[in-house]
Length: 351
Ligand SMILES: Nc1nc2c(ncn2[C@@H]2O[C@H](COP(=O)(O)OP(=O)(O)OP(=O)(O)O)[C@@H](O)[C@H]2O)c(=O)[nH]1
Ligand SMILES: [Mg+2]
Image 1: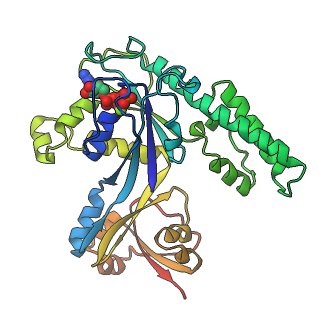
Image 2 (image 1 turned 90 degrees about the vertical axis):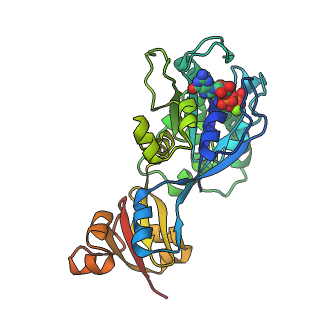
Image 3 (image 1 turned 45 degrees about the vertical axis):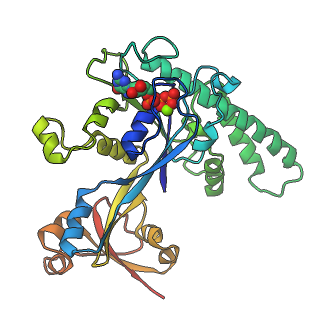
């Protein structure tokens, strides 16, 4: 399952965001280090297309894509040296697919800021510093092991691994995220896999979220996403109709955030529909039909023959598979078909 790790300074609003996400009651308090246990929450990815399909097919079940968020304790300057609660919780987000930095932009004298000022740009610098330092210590250990093994290793990639680890180390030592080290286009697949398996925090996509509020001052700071977390929490129980009545956007801030995470991870959705279930499946843009079939069942990738594919819009307008077929909008896609967002699919699988 897709997972997003939240990082931020204490009192940036991570747990509030987490609460918005899960509507669980994670303790939220005006107290730095309120979160002392990592907390995982899974949320369904709301997709109106899926709901429409389920209604059309009178499907018994609607199965949404899921995305998991992991809340950890706030980091402070020097966490990698043990300040605050240290960075002991970072291991909980090592396996996440991306990092979401929650940056405080709201002014509130009653809520302590560990640096006694509100400045998202400087907070980002602190976070990048702590994350790269955590990666540095991991890479240094890795280098020692790789060099020790080099003489005895039968691994044909051994020296390439050392070179890559060295390059990554160079970046993080200079406080540059590991993801700034680009793999050459012809890089060995196994080397890329190995790199991913290192689970470096700063090698993941990093998205910056500004926690703003109505009284947020104007910052000269470019961010990826703005969300009024406290404001959204206040609206969280309202229906779309109630939101429209109040004059706020019918799409919740959380839905927009999840969309943005999908974008950051380069993901899209294809859909399947039948009487049993309507279901959303997540794939990486550019994936071909067989690999997408493999999302349903690993066997499906090998046994893939063809896929019946049509656009969501055609499916709805023409009233389903029959209409799509009669209307000439059905595409019998082969192994080299790159799946597109919103494709409705039926795989034809061999024995
Ligand atoms: N005024 C205001 N207060 C907020 C906003 N977002 C969060 N808070 C408050 O700030 C305090 C800290 O929020 P949390 O969500 O617990 O912060 P955190 O990032 O999880 O903090 P740690 O767990 O200590 O790292 C709480 O009292 C929240 O109610 C906001 O947008 N405006
Ligand atoms: Mg918290």
